[in-house]
Image 1 (cartoon, rainbow, N blue to C red):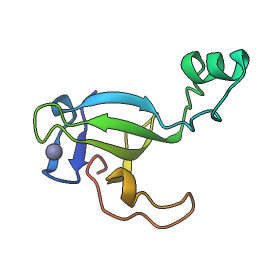
Image 2: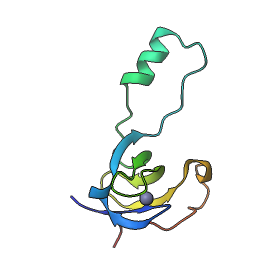
Image 3: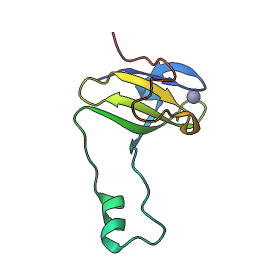
Amino acid sequence: MSFVLTCPNCGAREVTDFAFGGELSSRPRARPSFRELSAYNYFRRNTAGVQREWWFHRSGCRAWFIAERNTTTNHVFFTARPAEVPEAGDPPVAPAGGGP
Ligand SMILES: [Zn+2]
């Protein structure tokens, strides 16, 4: 399935221009237990629905950015540079392609 992602630097491009970097997760505390570190390294939520995730524009500006996407429909709600990502529940910062 193909869809369009909007790079914050380059604009809308086919998803084949990008590399998926995985779901956004929070880092463990400074001295994590073995269990916490294992969970961080190996466990994923694998959400069927809306999640925030990392993307890399490998055929363009080679920047990492964050997208909020519905994993079942590939509708992209927004893309943003990491420092510009709104808190959950805030309105999106930029329109993104992917929807009808
Ligand atoms: Zn780009």
